[in-house]
Image 1: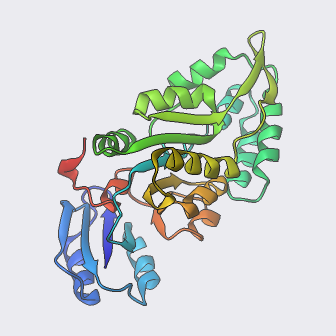
Image 2 (image 1 turned 45 degrees about the vertical axis):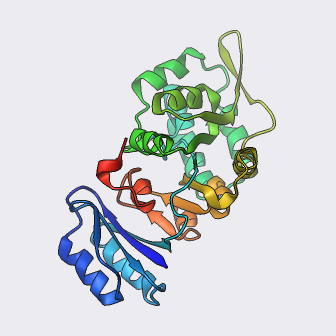
Length: 288
């Protein structure tokens, strides 16, 4: 059995749309997870016109996901940080404070879309930050970093139901430590910016945490818990997330770059992070 989930921003999902799709696909009873926001119904098979319908409802700012019904509620959340759990790219914010924001943001965008090697792009961008006062990190955290809507609800609800939550970023521990504590993650992994005498040296500790390291983190976490990758829900937006998204039982592309969305079936373009709870069958009144 499969389940079809329809998700929009609050008030954006019309009952008539949900019911007409259920009828067209011969689905089971329509279940509302949140009024006018999220609904689901069961299906015996995946419809042949799945992606045509997906494209149609995208035009209505509605996300549509199809996945196996069994095992969709996951035991591990593995999340990227920049542009996923938070709304910014931390290195871009540091660069902006240093007066080189445009140059670094362009490299970041190309790297996240898979046009540049992630590690080489990271080394280049960090090099441009040489001499920046480390106190700027605290300023960026306090004044520029905001959570993606639904971040706290996602982590709190999954943890309340026994799941383990890990923040795994190609960014920096200077930020992941604070964000993980803010949101409630069990652990965080990221790269370490090197500094001397209160200034960034323009380098990052090795080995660099990139695409392969995110996959390794997933494998480490499931092995420690005696479970498998099928028990993981991973979420990210950039090319360096593709490895873990493809390995996880549920890999979700959240407001993702085109190269990522093209390779991932579970795509959330309009909802926020609470969409990941709806995908697992949680209703709004079950949120922690």
